[in-house]
Length: 300
Image (cartoon, rainbow, N blue to C red):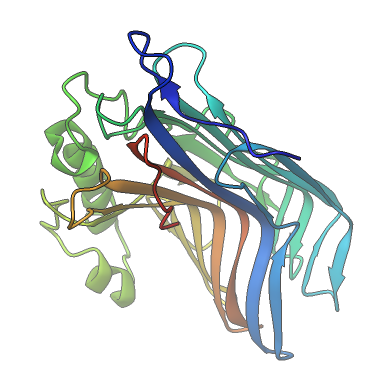
């Protein structure tokens, strides 16, 4: 298949492409690095990656079973990229769907969906992408048989500022993330490890290159200790829901604009009792990078 020309053409000079965009997106349904009760490294399942020129990729997730430790019944991943139909820019969609998830018969869910949708402005018209997590959700999430209700905070980063202010410099965004930290730090019965990682007074500071937060603001109904998006479950370990990491990589040569990356993992776990190891289910990553008509190299 021939590569598509993803330059947006200057209407005043149709032979001169003014903007170019390199897409980047990937998704997988499950990954893990286990050490107990068996040693096994599970590569990302149903992994898809979007080519630099966008288009569409889809992969069905066949049923997966690992010795009664990790399993899922099915699911799929998809990535898509194309010029936006609503603005001068480029749209990317990344989705990971896991169905019938089971982790040690302790963490189960009928359906887990991670979804990131971005619109990146064309080069020269801005550099901060608009982002939303509209389809992101849990269906029938249970911890040790207990039905767990989560409160989503899908507008944590939005809406995008008209003046192209970065999420890393937006007082409202940083305040919402700081409130997440504060809700954890002021929770009752906070374990020592959480107290160290979420100390009182911790705030999201301007000018950082990485923001760590969650699209889940609270959890209700889980056994163990719940604080914010985190569950500390005795005899299992730690569970992080809707884990979101946002990074910004400036181009020191200024030939391209800053590169943003949004990395969402719906269930991240750190087992340390019945089993040992780390992993995640429902993972989606999206970003993009623009340049002038001469093209650019995506840094992923």
